[in-house]
Image 1 (cartoon, rainbow, N blue to C red):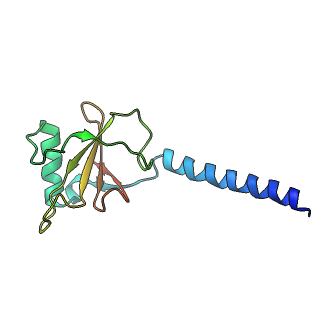
Image 2: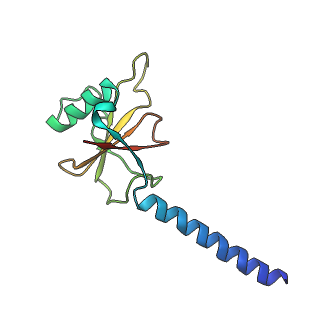
Length: 122
């Protein structure tokens, strides 16, 4: 097999594999967690979101950009983030709830500062 043909096949294979990764992210292949299985602090934060606050952290409610594309694709401004207090942390910690929609219609939980997400199943 000549080098030119091998390059074309390698490019095709890479494009195909990349497209599979995008499809997997866009189809919402996220794990779920029942709301009653969330940590107590996350359940309290979820309740605050649903009642519209008041929120304990100034950054609660800011737009979450979803720049990594981990959540289903939506227009900018659709997602908002809220801090879930972490016992023993001296800052906001790594736990967040991301609410989608206005009013919120879907919720996601991360306990590792956006590295992974679980859709909250209510």
